[in-house]
Image 1 (cartoon, rainbow, N blue to C red):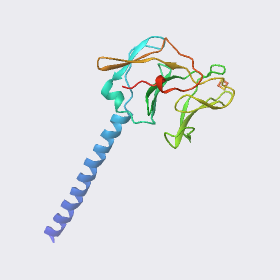
Image 2: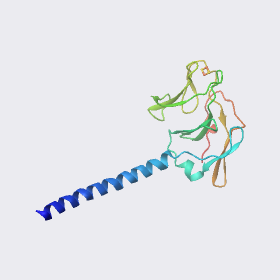
Image 3: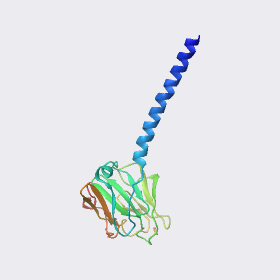
Image 4: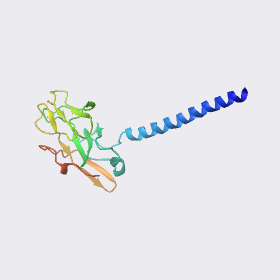
Length: 169
Ligand code: FES
């Protein structure tokens, strides 16, 4: 009897141990993917946003907010775009809404919804609805050595999306 209980206890603990290891591994993987990028410097300057390997690991279709630096890094098929969060209508801050239906073919969900007058933008920053007269402005992205930089002091206006606007990393 004692042996059966010990075996049962042992098996139970073994199951919990395995579950714990799996949970820790999942949490670790999640932690890596959700870890905020640590950027030194503020809006208006040229900022090192991360290492090439770190940025390259962001999946296509993902939009990463850089709140303090006032832009979103969007990974589209042709590369990365740094989208200025300022609405091109009257300048409101445009949030990324991951649960809204997508306006592009890269993913089923996610778009930018301006809270002021209803403009909607896709992952490319292209306007799909509302009074905004042009796509979200973009910032130049450069690769210097093993680092990726975004120049938030050099916003570029555009009339649409072209693949040349996206930077391969
Ligand atoms: S400021 Fe964004 S729609 Fe008017």
